[in-house]
Length: 308
Image (cartoon, rainbow, N blue to C red; front, side, top):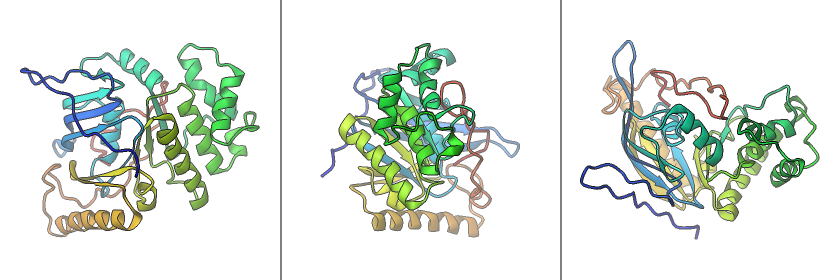
């Protein structure tokens, strides 16, 4: 039995304002995210409440356009919610300046992306060292070597990304995410560009981070087999939580996802409006381009109307 998950949210006082809880690595309370578009407001998240405990691995799934990546970006402090509260590394994010948010992410958060986001002109070792340099630290050769060794890439510090396979590049990206010793790892489709063997290796790494280092891992994925490596799966539909599954197996995850996708298809076929987003489900299956990495290793905010 994997480590149990505590869903308790921080208590609110008479004012309804969340009190930061130091032992809470990441949590959302009644989070809404509304984007403006030419067609009118688009609701990407509609009152989502979720908590992610230390040493747990959570997969987030749902039909295209359900708000999965928006949830990830809000939880990571990369996008500000329209309403609701987000706690990251024991800190209530509301009211923090961009500079303080950047410093918080650099110290406590690691990011892993589908497209790796390695800088092609830097070696593997230099890519791993980048977060430390951005934080004003002089990287030590032994700590860079240790980060690469932890993901099975010892001896590859001098290789540039073009000299590595896709699986190797993703392992370097994970080493980069780990080098600062983050409390929370956010992974957006980390196996989406990998073959099955490389994907299995990456998922095993993420699993070990939760089990052995007590990191909090939150992963967006479309793959039921990948989701089954997590402790639980959160399902989203139309920007709302549509249930969760503990100790998942691939068949049960696939069945639940197929049911949600079929429901979305029925709404599309009937020209119905999504209760959360206020627009027809058709036309939302296109996945937006992967956001570019910014100076603190995170993608920029999701473009207006890009609900994933």
